[in-house]
Structures are given as C-alpha cells and as structure tokens.
Length: 154
Figure 1 (tube, rainbow, N blue to C red):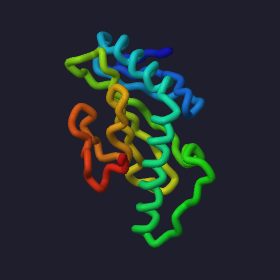
Figure 2: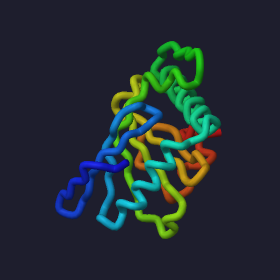
Figure 3: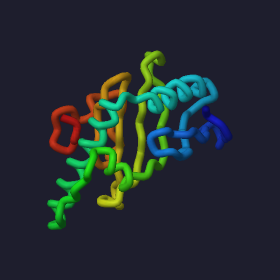
Figure 4: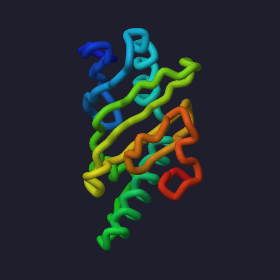
C-alpha cells in the first residue's frame, strides 16, 4: 500500500494510492516506526463508508458555497454530493504520532478550485469525520474546531 519510502534527514515521505481520488498522494511521517501506523491510516481512509464520504462531500459543498458567497460569486450546484470531488485534489496526508495507535487519524491537505490560497483540510479520527474546511493546520488530535462556523461538519 505505501511505497517509495524516502528519508529526508529523519522526515519521511512515501506514496500511497487513495481510492476516493483514484490517484497516488504523498504521505508524510516522522519516523520509520510510523510506517505501520501510516499503513493503518491509509487503509482506513480507503475504506470509508458511503455515509462518511457523503458527510465529507456535503461539508465541502457548504464550505465551497459559503466561500463563494463571501466573494460575491454564485454558489455552485452539484448534481450529487460526490460531484464536488471533481473540484478537489489531494496534496498529501500527514501522519501524526498519537498515543493510541489503534485509532487511525487522517489529516488530509487538499487543493480546491474555489479557494486556491488556503485550500482545504479534512480530519477523520477513527470513524468520526471531525473537520472539513479551509486548511488552517487544525490539530487532528484536538477538538478540530467542533461547533465553530469555520468547520463545515454539522
């Protein structure tokens, strides 16, 4: 699953195929000991339920249209929630070093067509989608801005 592992003076990068986007992305982690956990995180992301994917896509649409309204542009209409994925490109996945490595934490950085400067961030911890919004470097082990208007998960 993870391949082409590269060591840059103790910072590691690798490539992994992401089913949702049908492409390989870069995975970033801090040590060789993180490889097994990184595999767990990628596998977990690749097996998200349809309900979780819909939740993410609906949040991305809310983010998109609120941003467009703020810059006085017309909101986008998507035939299905998944159609928003055509406007999103993953940049990379950050693998953290949580105390409990049995719970996968996905911290995904993405580009999106409507907000080219800040892009987008998704955070999923275990089976909970915790954050979808502008890339703000939200701590994937923290509260992820739960309930804040800049977090488009409802």
